[in-house]
Length: 217
Image 1 (cartoon, one colour):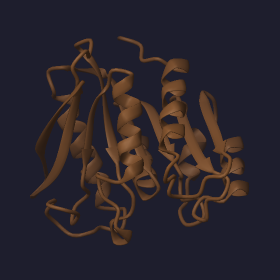
Image 2 (cartoon, rainbow, N blue to C red):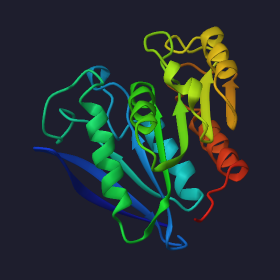
Image 3 (cartoon, helix red, strand yellow):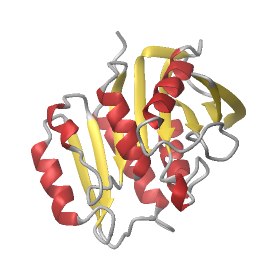
Image 4 (cartoon, helix red, strand yellow):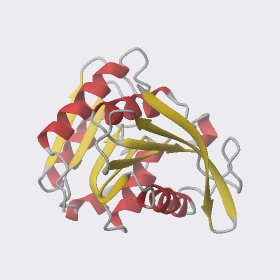
């Protein structure tokens, strides 16, 4: 069972809405995860099927999870910032999770899907606190992911082989360029939206966390 609570996150002069989910059998203090949603201009929000799948994979491994809406999305205040201002949204979400009494601040994770992958991983690259990174369907056709070439924290990247936003060739090239520890997965027969195949994502996330378990400091 998982308890669910609507929360509000202060980010500079605006407030972001979020949903905090806590596994009832969580071993406190436990890891905490921040989940970033796809592009709001194309209907993306924290209730997206892939962000929910990420959450399911994380809570199954005992993480407290925060999904939140980027600025200008849903009830979050502010206006869309083209992936620039949203970096502050991720930092604010990390601050929120980091301060939860149930969370071990040495065991934080950032995960994101599509636009949320790009924003979340860039934010994590500037923040030492996350110790695990997860990116689903990184939009390599549109955005630069070269910042991952120096990323030495354990990371999972997953894409479908029919993804028009994350084409297989540049995705595999990115996987080759980034250092270990890493786990890269190409899911056969899956496009960018993962509809009906969400359990494949849950399985890969669980495998990643089993392979690179959190270490208490």
